[in-house]
Length: 234
Image (cartoon, rainbow, N blue to C red; front, side, top):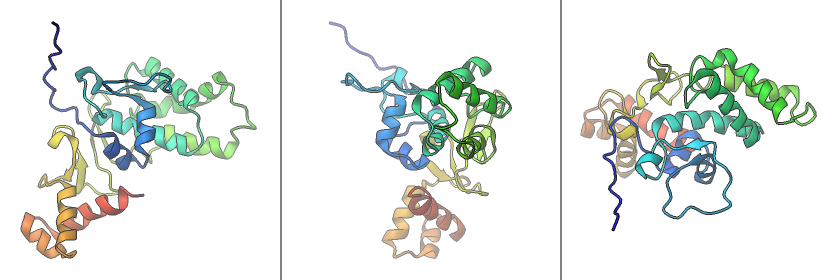
């Protein structure tokens, strides 16, 4: 009888449930499940073709990895502007072929070719001007070739995402696959933001007391609470 022996899960990939991944990027868990192929003991026939395979698929783990999560932010932003999944799939395909990397849109190099690739993807999929006007095109081009979604993403020498600081103009909160499996934490202390937010609620929103409990600053408490209760709910 053949039995499945799970491989040791490697350090530094990050692991996120569909629900958490959706919360962090402003999507729904249903969307994330549609966009990415992840492990399922009983895959359903007839599901839409996903955009790529999850980092966790090889280890038969449900959910997504850190680089999946960062790339999914761009997918969510394009979908919010009305870009169809076939066009996004084509953008990803052309980006992978050009940059020879599984997560092309996150790369800083993609900014140089993003406009050309997006317009080529539209033409290939037969998207006419009437269906996608100039205003919408400009908004999407800012997503694929601009800096807005790239702010807070730290890249290594290979142009791969290694850390994500999700709060605008702040490095107090970080998602780092090398720390606590990528869970959102305070950068300096490593305390999970979810724990701080729970303590803040339980202690009647007394930031000073929570800061004393965790030996952090009140500013740290407020940043963690902001991330968990406002930013993730946006």
